[in-house]
Length: 224
Image 1 (spheres, one colour):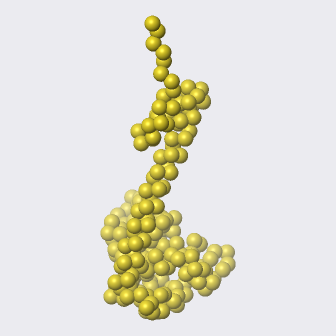
Image 2 (tube, one colour; image 1 turned 30 degrees about the horizontal axis):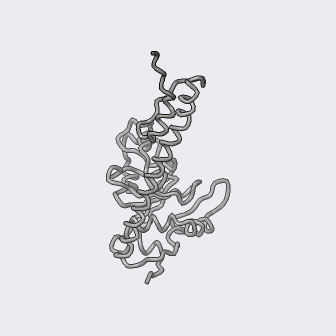
Image 3 (cartoon, helix red, strand yellow; image 1 turned 45 degrees about the vertical axis):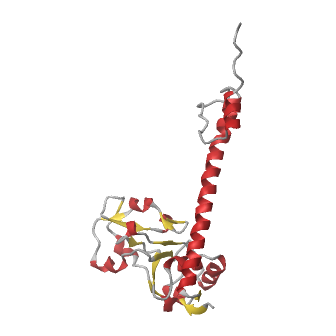
């Protein structure tokens, strides 16, 4: 049976640093990457975070470093978009348009928490609390007050495992779709004998044999 608890009781929610503390921000030349809202997608931190970095982390910013299993949530603009921090991002700093949620692991599994907070109905609850103006904004206090359904840890981990299997299947389907999307224009070019203007594209080796035979066209007749 799931209990209902405040997010603030399940985790430490740390507000964003102030914007004036990022005066030393450079274009990927510093030692410490900064996690910006644009770096967060599909629950992960993209490599392009490396494009923005700090040459030196001031003492005032040291408390805003992240650790593995922290959640980084966008608090300004694309409110609610979030990522689970991986080992490779240890000690990075998060941007002033974000906040950090550090789960209390004895109470809640980080993978379960990000899955729960990413649920559309939970995001709707967050947006209802948001300050809507020129830019939509939420505060740490608003996030702390979110209600969270908390089943026992064993059930949380079972759910995380099931979601990982679903994600793996989705990734496989995306890769298959990407291969087919690349195959379609290449097939048309081959079937027309290269008459479509542009570069002649190879048929992927993963394409079905019937499509590869069609793309090669009929075999030339041998002259007797």
